[in-house]
Length: 268
Image 1 (cartoon, rainbow, N blue to C red):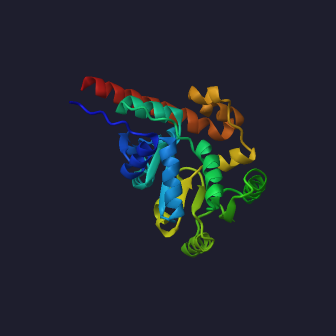
Image 2 (cartoon, helix red, strand yellow; image 1 turned 90 degrees about the vertical axis):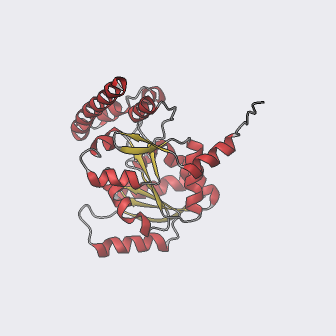
Image 3 (tube, helix red, strand yellow; image 1 turned 135 degrees about the vertical axis):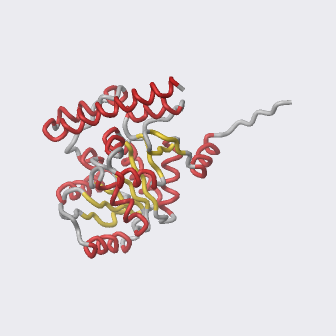
C-alpha cells in the first residue's frame, strides 16, 4: 500500500530553512525558497545575531558576476542569494525546471522591517546619503514607530581605511544590531558583505536602492509592469543618463547568455 504524507506549509518552511537548497544559474547559485521561508530564516538568524548575508540577484548582478570574480565569490558564499529580478526568475525556472517566485529586495525590505518591529529587533543601515538616511529615520517614525534603529552610517564616497571600517563595524555591533541593511550599490555592497559580514553580529542584506523607494525619492511602476519584467524600463525612463548603458548592455548580454544555455540544453 502506498502512503501519501501531506506536508503543511509550516513544515515546508522549516525544511527550506534547514536545507537552503541552491541551484545553478550562469555559474552562480541561487536559492529555491519561498518568501515565507526566507523571511522566517532571516528573522531567526537575526534574533540569534548570527553572522550571515543575503544577495538579491538581478540581471545586472548576474552579468557583472561573469567578469567580476570578487562579486561571483560573494554571491556563491552568501547564505541566501535570491531571485530579485523577474528576468532572473524566468531564467532560473526555465533552466532548472523550477517554480521559484520573485523575491525582490524592494519588496522584502519593508516586510522585514515590520517583522523586526514586531520581534523587537534592532535595525541599522550602512550606506546611502546622509539626507536619505535622515528621511529613512523619519519614514520609520511615521510608518513603523515600533522599530528600533541602531545606527545609520553614510560612509564617505571613497576607499575607506581599515581603521575607518573597523570603527564602523564596532559601532554597528555596539548598537546590538540584529539586521544590517547595506545600501552601497552593486557590486560594492556584495563585496563588502563578503569581506565584513563575519565581523558583524547580525544578518546583512544588500538592498541597493530599496531605501530610496521607501522614502519616495524613487518610484516603482505598477504591479503589472513589474510582473511582465519591465520594471527596468520604468526605472530607465526616470534616470536615462545613469542607467542607459547598464540596462541596454547588461540586458543584451543576459539574453545572449540565456539563449546560449537554452540551445545547449536542447542539444543535450
